[in-house]
Amino acid sequence: MKPTVLHPLTRRREVLSALATAAIIALAGGRAGAAGTDGTMTQDQTPTEPQESGRVQRCGTDGMWFPAERGALETMVDGYLAGPASDIPSAPIALIVPHAGYVWSGKAAGTAFAALRGHAYDRVIVMGLSHRTPLQGASVLTVDAWETPLGRIPADGEAIQTLLESPVVREHPAAHRDEHSAVNQYPFLQRAIGGQFRLVEMLVGELSDRNRTRLARAVSEVMTDRTLLVVSSDFTHYGAQFGYVPFSENVPHNLEALNNLAVQEILQVDVPGFDAYLERTHDTICGRNAISLLLEILTPLEDARGLRVSFDMSGRQSGDWRSSVSYAGIVFWRESEGLNEHEQQVLLEIARRAAGLFLETGEVLTVEEAGFDLTPRLRAPGAAFVTLKNRGELRGCIGHVVAVMPLYRSVAQNAVQACRDPRFTYQPVTAGELDDIDLEISVLTPMRRLLDPDRVEVGRDGLMMTRGQLSGLLLPQVPVEQGWNRTEFLAHTCLKAGLPSDAWRDSETEILRFSAQVFGENGPRD
Image 1 (cartoon, rainbow, N blue to C red):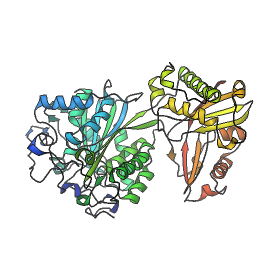
Image 2 (cartoon, rainbow, N blue to C red):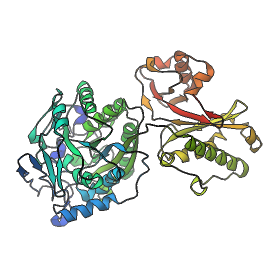
Image 3 (cartoon, rainbow, N blue to C red):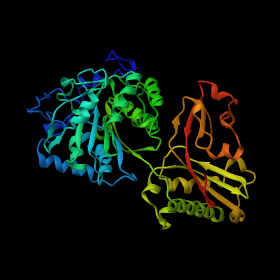
Image 4 (tube, one colour):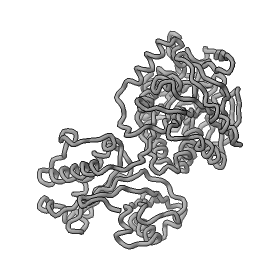
């Protein structure tokens, strides 16, 4: 069912103003957090005017979305932050977190904010949305500080003034008044990283592609290596009251599958892909504009990595799937350095032991029990290919193109799978070959959509071609080994996908580019 278009500015962002009027499930008893599951108020709640002292903006929504009393708020937030830390190998540079009442989305948000523990930031830019005031472009608020029950957060006046120089940014105070999408993140920031940072509150509205690029450039200009970006967004708002009922059967499963599709585009930092996903599904992601802006900002960062660390749905909590809002926590970081020599050696040992154990006994290696030194980078999500060669002849090459598991597990699993590469079904690798097998591992960067084939660089890039159900991939080292130029590389990747050799020239063929850190038992590959 196509959602009702409630916001006239663009078809694909039709639900922005619907969120301001939806009346949904509330917790009984009127206790703190009795806000709706989508981050809107229930009908019996009345917004309070923020109390301003000079240029201090008091959060006028506390007591509705989170406790108004300091001790209760600290206890609640600290509880959400206390869960097990995700395997993020370096300081996060960006988060995507939900903004509903804490009793609904606090756990999902806290898991993402927990990744900030132990890291310090000078500047935090929180990018939310305006639920009540339609915005073109973006709005920032020029105050000296924001005040929550946990204390004051100083504003970053310099960054705010720099952003206001962009033609895409204005100050719309009415949009910020009683707007919870940004405010709900502040107590988490105060407890996760303390009070040493300065804050920019930005509400992101409708953006043309051109203005999104301009705004991304403006935000990038105020970013340093001690800047954190926080995008505030709930995910799918499902139900008749949101005008979005794309399915009525097996709702929990279908909602999670829908979220997985959206997150896949986000983790691949694929701006066109995320745009196309929204056009295709009409998914009611309220912070879609801020998410797409974040992806635009991250696009130039080739080493940006992402991980969804949490996911929940209000229907799962309430048991009522007639109306449900999805919450996801996503963390981005930069993998500025590749694996060091020790980490490479550990992965090679894991691959050889996994392959050897499988070929000799048919058993699968339990890496966690084998005593390997699994550093944070090896435990972090990663995608890897394992290549087996016998005296230079290919005997198997299998891998993951997307980071769906910790890197060490990807290597162990694909070492076994490479021993049974379907291309060698009638002549599989045997245990007797082990002494002659050379192992090579390729650790892939995330796939990025490539719009200009002329930007392919032989020796740096790997390629994946897809059209419909057909797909084919070639690692970066392949064209170098074969002596191909750019055009030949593109053509052979098409052939690998079962497509005509010139299919890369067709707009219906999707080209994905990636790079890889390649190393083997004889040392790293250039």
